[in-house]
Image 1: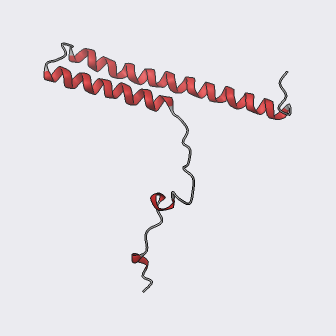
Image 2: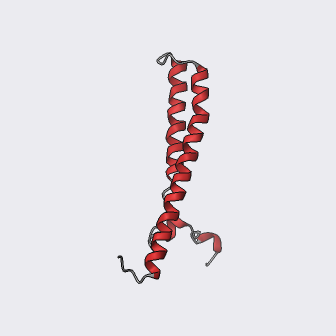
Image 3: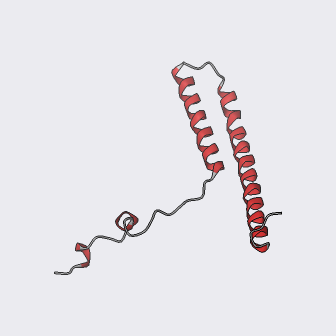
Length: 99
């Protein structure tokens, strides 16, 4: 019996042995945003528990600050990637010679 439902689905878990792991581009802005939001969540939890004596207004103001920091990191990462790409393109045109 060769029923299609009896065969395993073609998922990335099933084909990982056939194909090497796909590299993902590092996104520093995602890391900064995740860590910032995690720190804010911990701050709110500690405040509600009574372990942290901080105004809710201060924690609320930190959210836009975290978003602005993320924006700055994303812009800086974009500038660095563009500069690296230009440098790599310039090396490719010059035959790989530096001088």
